[in-house]
Image 1 (cartoon, rainbow, N blue to C red):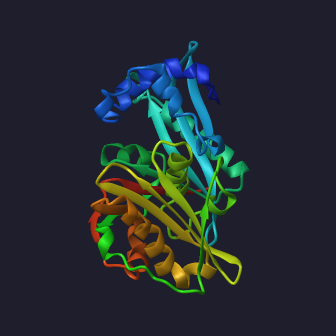
Image 2: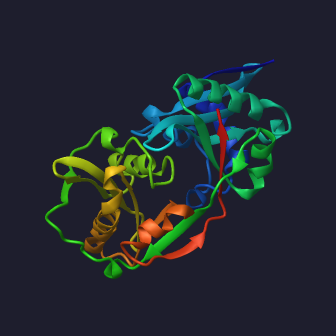
Length: 287
């Protein structure tokens, strides 16, 4: 009999075996998942503190997990985000994935989420269709060289750099024009010290209108995510340009982001980005 319960760090020993079957394409530079400590790292840090974590246990062994959270959206209300769903390859044709998904939905419903979003590679899309999640929109990867990003100087928009941050700022716990969950994920990478980077808040008339984060991924590349409030939508070009432009001091060759396709015109208001369609598919289900 399969039991669905909250995950614990002790479960990571069993999850290592699960990850070795489901995440063989991750951590390629490090040779994949080879230690329990690597699995524990996936369940630590600033962002994970706000994620829900359920596991499926059978005969005393964990054979799957689901990780999820709730994020506010000023237009559609509270949105549930499924970060990952991993099932032991020997059990993927059973109902365990469905049980974990439905259990996560129950938790998200209790937290007043009105819909749930997941991001799936094409190989997993059939599963999400079977559990009544359907493709909605597309994801774009955008990039440009830092020298093409204008400075956008204006006294009406104040930029505040956040320093000595130890937890996810309240201002960065939402999604509007950003892809759901992407802002918190990149912010956590910077706060946890996995990449050097900077966090910004933007104000007009002493009111918060936008936020941004930029991180240096490697010597050649920086990644940024920005978002704006409903009031700040008219200043999105300034928020985008100032955040992405912060990469210039690192002398990287490319600055990039991942955005919803339907927000491309907003991002192009700051600079003309090169873009390509992501192979990952956003899927959603109403609760």
